[in-house]
Amino acid sequence: MKVEKSALTQGLIRCHDCGRLAKQTSHTNHCPLCDSRLHARTSNSFQRTAALLLSGVSLYIPANIFPIMTVSQFGVGEPHTIVGGIIALIHSDMIPIAMLVLIASILVPLLKLLGLGLLLLCVYYRWQVNARLWTNMYRIIAFVGRWSMLDIFMISILVSLVDLGGVAQIIAGPAATAFAAVVVLTMFAAKSFDPRLIWDSQQ
Image (tube, rainbow, N blue to C red; front, side, top):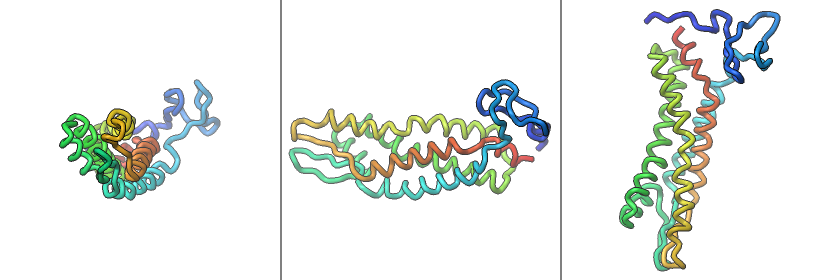
């Protein structure tokens, strides 16, 4: 696969603040437009992303093992994991909300963790891949991250909607905290990853 010369090999650096493509010389390393300091690559991007990703993976397990909510009816209830909560919502004829929890709590975090892991492996082992396609995959992961807290907000809404004066209640469990931490860690991991490393691995 033929790879064209990168901007970095030609001495060109894109400003992180204004987006200006500037020529880096020995006399200056500041953007000529906004005077911000130019960085060829985000410092320690791979190491920070890997650390945040491993932390997210370690918390993803308790987020799915411990109870995320307790559905109580007439004062009687039992804690449910994410999967148990989905089943309980289905039995309560809340299928749309159950599907939202399934997508936002299980599928999206898992796909984000797998996607970021593949990006790191691609950079580390210098896989010869379609860099444009993998860069688009990174952009999708970064875009989806902002919607990953939907089910946490949904649980908060359910607490107020389903609380019928002691007849029925939904109480968030400890797994909600672990899951929120997973969401935050994956968001930071995606933010700290420099997608230009994908292109560097093709050199």
